[in-house]
Image 1 (tube, rainbow, N blue to C red):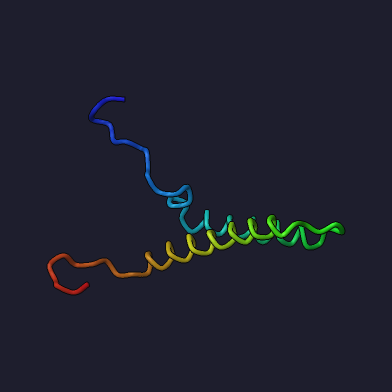
Image 2: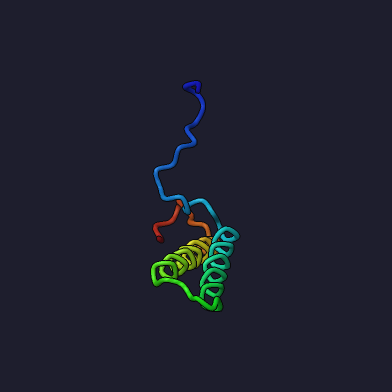
Amino acid sequence: MADDEPSRHTTGPWWTELGPVGGAVLVVIGVAVALWLFLRPSGGSAQVYYQAGKVAAIGLVVAGTTLFARRQPPKDPDTDEG
């Protein structure tokens, strides 16, 4: 890698660059896994439900914050507001 190339390594968690579509996909995956476990005759362990809930919650946060950030008006650097 040359010195003039920007580094593509991020220091944040894996879900920081998913965007609203990726967040919605995570929500769907989390809910689908939880429903599949609930509708199975043998059920599932509490740990798997917990993990499915975490995936859905991360998806909700990612999608919500991304969409919320897009609705904010751009900040004007010439004013003292914000």
